[in-house]
Each structure stands twice: as structure tokens, then as C-alpha cells.
Image 1 (tube, rainbow, N blue to C red):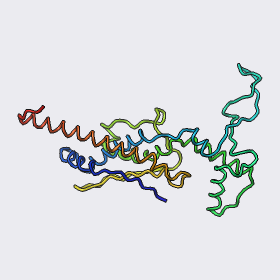
Image 2 (cartoon, rainbow, N blue to C red):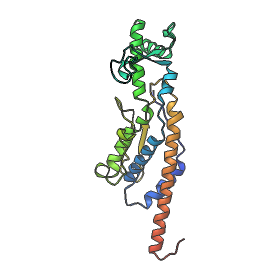
Image 3 (tube, rainbow, N blue to C red):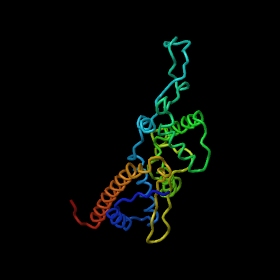
Image 4 (spheres, one colour):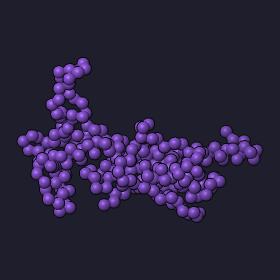
Length: 249
């Protein structure tokens, strides 16, 4: 299944054409550079999913194995260390009705696999839920492949002259597993297109997440980059006019 996000980019396209006509770069270089800036901004504006929201949607309740602290200020008290944490899903009386269990069962049936006993389903639920927590920024991560692709080309050698991409250690998104998006560099020629796609919502439980969160982020990124280009166009035209002896405000 492929989910497509479409935004109104007519004004951006007009401004980009004017910007390209004033640039020394080739049309392909201009497209790739702007694609980098757009994906970079899209990452900023695509929100992370709060762990509390994930827990609520999958009906997860935090629990701890019973371990007593043998030392420290909490000596004699039950430990709440992450090493002893696990999750219960739904109610103890009817765990099979928990949403995450239903999701796992539906996936197994879709592939024709046998449905295991509840104890195994709970183990699978633990694994799936922890993976979802780790990938709370999965929508953001869908922009990473395109961002890195365009940065490596648009600025020449290793993105020279371009602002850096935020590393995961500095608050940027982290890619877990296979790439969840991609891009296609603009081809050489006077009429060219650079492509960006985010497939982070494909085959996910919430297939509307990309439209709900990714689309506004991409829209804002394009609008801001269009504004930046207009300001740059005005600056260049003003400089050219001043060199020609034309007085400007």
C-alpha cells in the first residue's frame, strides 16, 4: 500500500523558476538543494508521537516485576528500574480484547500463520509495543533518506556549504530498521523534478498519520522555503540594480 501526500506547490514552483533563472547553478542543482532544505524543515515540523499516546491507543499499562532493592536510599522497597518493567495490555480478565492483541492476531491471520496461545501473544505484544515506543518519531524518520540523499549532492562534496542535518543525539530523528522513505535526484536538463516521499505510514496501524501530521509539516516546509527564495530574489535583484546605477529603496 502506498500513501501519497499532496500539497499545493504552484506558488513555490513559480518562485523556484525565477530563483533558478538568477542562479549560477544548473536547474538540477537548484532542485536538489531546495529539496534538501524542504526535507530538513519537514523533519522539524513533523511531531513525535508521545509515549503516553501510544500506550493509550494500544491499551498498555506499565507494570513491574517484584524485585526488592537491597541497597541505596530505596532499600527494602520494590524496584521500579526499567530492567524490571513490563506491560500489561487490556484487562487481566479479557486480555484477548486488548487492541494490540487484536492487531497481532489480525496480522497473523492475514499471513495465514497459526494463532499461538495467549502467553505467546503477550510476549509478541511486549515486543511490538517496545518497538513502537522506540519508533515514536517514525513519521519524522520517513524524511531521513531523502534529506541525506539531497544533502550529499546539492552542496557538492558531502553537502559542502549546506547547513548540517541534526543528528539523533542532538534531537534529530533516528532511523530504525529499513528506510521509511526516499528521494530521487533531479535529472540534468532545463526541465527537471526532484522527488521526495515518506512511506513511514505504510502498513502501520494508523494509516492516516502521515496525512494528519506529515502533510501539514511538508506544507509549512514548502511555504517557508518559498518565502526564503522570494527574499533572496529581492536581494539579488536589488544588488544587480545598484551595480547598474539604479537607485533602490
